Length: 529
Ligand code: KIV
Ligand code: ZN
Image (tube, rainbow, N blue to C red; front, top):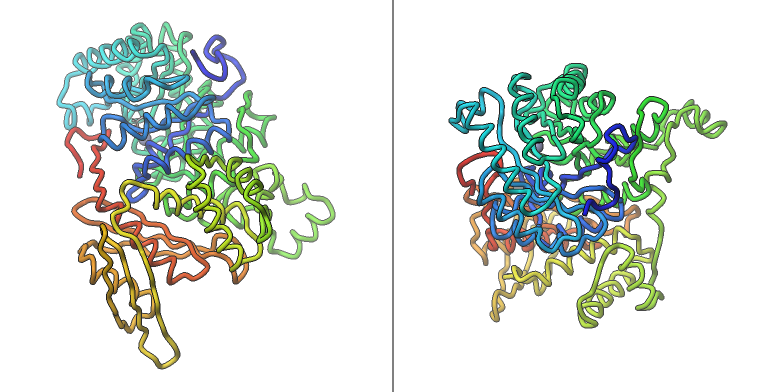
C-alpha cells in the first residue's frame, strides 16, 4: 500500500512529495531529543498538516527509538510512516519490526558513497559499498514494497560512482532515490544540475522518484532543494522550523510556501494544508525547546509584521503592495481564544481532540481539565498554545519516567533583599524539602534548592523563557537544557509564574536525564552516549 497516492506511477507528475524528518534528523539537533509521547503528538500534527511521509526515527538507535517509531506507526493512518536503517541486516530488521503495524510503511536505508566517507568511516571499497547497498534494499523489500535508498554525502560523491550505485539499487527494488547533501556543501546551480544529470544518465531512472535532503551549513538548504525540484526532484526531505543536525535541514514551511506562492515558477504542487503550518511550528518549538527566531520566514513572529510607515500605508491601501502571502494562509489566525473560565468539559475535550489529544481514561481527562480550570482562573483567555502547554505537562506527568515531582515552591524577594526559595519535591514515596538563598534572584535560588536535594551535578547549558501568548498574564514557558555524561536533554515547564515554570522545567529535565535513553547516532559506526 502506498498511502495517499500511487505517486510513482507517473514520474513527471506535478505532485511534490513532502517527506518530513523532524522526528529523525530534527531530533539529531543537539538537545532536541523527544520522548515517545511527544513524538506521537508531533506525528499527529504532521498528519493534520498532510505531509506525505513521516520519518519517525531510527529504530536501531535504542530501545526508546524503536518504541517511538512503533508508537507513531500504530497511531498515524494517512501519512506513510518511515524508519531509517543503515545498510545492515540488523538495522533493517529492527526498522521492519518497528513498522509492522503501520497502515503504510517505508524503510529508508543508506550507505555513504563519497571517497572520504568510504575510506575513513566505512573502510570499504566501492564494490563493497554497492554490494551492501543492494543487499540492504533487497532485505528491506522483504518488509515493504516502499523502499528508499540514500547515498550518504552524495553532494561530495563522484558522479560516475553515484550512477553505478543508484542503478544497482533500483534494480534491487528501491523506488525512491534520495540524494543527500549531508554536510551542506552544495551550491544551488550545481546541485540542481546533479539531479538533472543523474536522471539523464541512470538507464533505469524512470523507475524511481528522485528526492533531495539538504543540510543548511551554508544557509542554502532550501535554495538547493528548490533547485533540485526545478531539475526534476519530486520529493523533498525537510523539517519543521528547519530543525536538524548542526545548522539543520531545509525548512518544510519555506519549501511548501515557495512552491505555493510561486506556482508560476514551479511545475508542481504539494498536498500540504498550509493553515496547519504555524500551529505545527509552535508545537515543535515548544516540545523541543528550540525557539523560532522572530524574523524566520513564514513562522517567525515578525514574518507578517509591517513596521515601516510606508509599508503599513501600502498594505492598508492594497495588501499585495508589500505582502506575497496571507498570514491566515499559513495559520497565523489560529492564535484565537478558544476556551474560557466558563467552558465545560465537552467543549474542552472537543478542542483538545482537535489538537490531537486523546485521553486514555476519564481520570486523565479530569486531571487535565482541572488544570485548565486553574489556569482559566489566573488568565481569562485560553489559547491553543495554552492547551498545548497543558498537554506537555500532562505528558510529562503520565510518563513512566517521572521519578521526581514538584510538590511545593515558596519564594520571596524584594529590592535590597536576598532572594529565598523553599522547595518540596517527592521522589518515590518520600518528600524532601530544602531552603536556599541566592544573590542571583528567585529563579536561581529555586533551581539551586532543587539541585541541593537531587545532586544531579548536571551542567545547565541553556535557560530560556518565552511567553506562550501575549499579555502580562500570559504563561511563561521555560526551557532548561541539562548535560551530563554526553547526554543532553531539554526540560519544559509552563506557568503564569515564571519561577514555578522554571522549577517545573528543571525537574522535567532531571527526569529525562534519569530515564537516560542512550542512543546511537545513525551516521557513525560507534555507539554514541
Ligand atoms: O544527511 C544525511 O545524509 C542523512 C541521511 C541519513 C539521509 O540524514
Ligand atoms: Zn541529514
